[in-house]
Amino acid sequence: MKNIYIIGVGLIGGSFALDMKKQYQNVTIYGIDNNPDHIKDAIVLGVIDKEATLNDLSKADLVIVAIPVDATVDLLPGLLDKVADHTLVIDVGSTKEDLCLKVKDHPNRRNFLASHPIAGTEFSGPSAAINDLFQGKTIIICDVEETAFKLQEKALKLFKDLGMRIRYMKPKSHDKHIAYMSHLSHISSFMLGKTVIEKEKNERDIFDMAGSGFESTVRLAKSSPEMWTPIFKQNKTNVIETLDEYISNLKQFKRLMEEEDFDGIYNEMKNTNYIKQILKGIE
Amino acid sequence: MKNIYIIGVGLIGGSFALDMKKQYQNVTIYGIDNNPDHIKDAIVLGVIDKEATLNDLSKADLVIVAIPVDATVDLLPGLLDKVADHTLVIDVGSTKEDLCLKVKDHPNRRNFLASHPIAGTEFSGPSAAINDLFQGKTIIICDVEETAFKLQEKALKLFKDLGMRIRYMKPKSHDKHIAYMSHLSHISSFMLGKTVIEKEKNERDIFDMAGSGFESTVRLAKSSPEMWTPIFKQNKTNVIETLDEYISNLKQFKRLMEEEDFDGIYNEMKNTNYIKQILKGIE
Image (cartoon, rainbow over all chains, first blue to last red):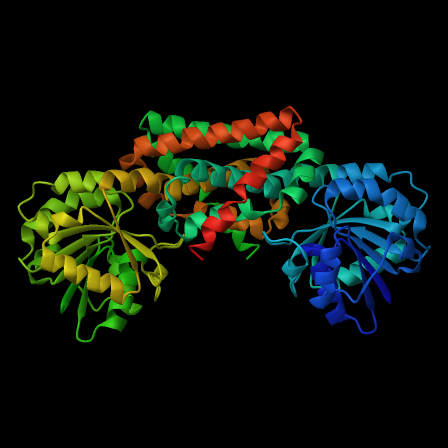
């Protein structure tokens, strides 16, 4: 690999760039971004080496598409038209079904690997890019058999070099489960933030009462709406299902409170403490 | 201060003990706990110096009551019966109205200061006690004028020595606002954990999909049901109000999803990003 193109030099694209520069000698990292300020910042910060355009992609050994998921679905077919036979194209989006469907019959489908690294922070833009973001994290690969075998190998080497743990899933299954494991957390956090802001907006002093618990629970409410709106749009059916179940659990908790069934409240919490065992695995 | 008694040698009581041992020379920290294992562990861990009983409290210069809030309401009147004129008694509970009401007319009300340090972790028991837990944290003092002036001074010095920022509130106002800033976060986190566990319990592999976002949002679901059930019981009315508003915001988000109003979804998130400015103050 010599010529690496990052489309979207934000948190994820930029963090890939930083890790690959550290990991590989003699690579040149080209950045492509709609926002000229992002390109400028990414060069100043040493995240990318040079600016490029979509017309340069025929020279690419690797293209990483790290833009909002709706933009990826729009861009990918035309992008696959441009690439050479040996070029590996990967995306990093949080939804996989629409994208895999879109390029299903593309003559260069074999150049593409659909992937989703479960890594990130609540920040965005090139200044959010950090070293070792992917170390020890899971990356989910979808429809692996649709990718050329040599390009699969190239991708797996890259993910392993960056410290990632690889899991394979079908796009439908990915989108269903990620709605529970990630998308719902974001909504619960955004709505918690909204509820507290609405209540307390005229009493700024009240935020002195915020402790690390509130901070941790509301952290995802800092996330980028530009990135998350298209994710919710593409994963609408699954997300609505998770919301239904979450709301119904909250209503039941409220009902127990109203009925003063505090043994019931205790049991709700005691049973959910099981999350400790589950999280041990990812700590 | 020479003789300090900690009732409940868990996360909060134990962390007070550790900081005071570091801060003050020549103090002896006595521990009182229903659970003999807690006392044993706390001595082995160097959290307390000696075991004591409630009958020893007449010798106390300072008593910190750090047990579940229902137990505090039961214990405090009898405890105030036992203490000497110069003894300061403080509690650290997450609800204040019931407690302040309970001791309102106690002849030794002036020995008691109602306080709530906004500090903690999701862990519990003596092994959860840590140094510097209170450094830079807010402590809320309620009904300060009900405490003897000399004992107020003693408490303020202690809180400042431990690095805390002091705020004064009425108990009613404390309980109302803390429902938003802390109690609701715990419920949103517990119910998130419950929703995901129910869905995914037969598919343990799915938890490989959990990233730092899920972990942060669900962290409080590890909290102790023994501690939280009485908090929700004492703050029932306020907690139900916060739950009503939270559920209504989630339902509105779901409605926007169903109507495919993704501009609306975008705006919900964009407006809530304001939480960044708010949290800056507490970081």
